[in-house]
Image (cartoon, rainbow, N blue to C red; front, top):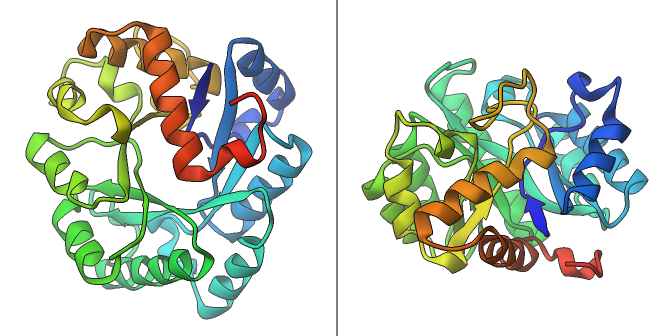
Length: 261
């Protein structure tokens, strides 16, 4: 029993076989999937998908830093309306991305602050995207994120950065496909994160975990990241599944909607 805490199954890459992908995930033991929006349109699609698959798919609503220039006060109002739906369990995906820099830095910072305020108003956890922007993310959270909770999704930093993230008491660290690769410090991070502060995800359709050669990631494949995490922690897959599922249920309130978790 696993929770894929971050998957973009609303994207067009799943248009031809979305129902089959969801069925395979459920049959493979993935009991819940959190689908975050990346702009207003995808946030609406995420909510529609969650309504169509009640108790299995849950939505996040937000604007990704790549789309930050599309954010406006009116978009914020519409996200706030969407956040009232019972299927919405988080604000996000939002954050800062200085790797591709598809939106100006100041715009990204403004939109980040707006999402923190939205999360506070809605009393929902944050799903935060961080890429080459750790210092600014931490500065914003220290200034504007007090008493908020959430997850640093698809964590890609080092141990020192993970320690800073964990200093934000209400936040968890989520591991995705990069944990299964050899070119990063994530194994060291995975060994030091407290069990009660970790999640697993796919970030589907991106970041296919090793050893798979698939061209598209999907929620069923979260088990490969969970298995790698179990190996690094000296635990069984079942134990890691139990821990990460309990964490996702606690953070996102999934137990209120799904009796099997």
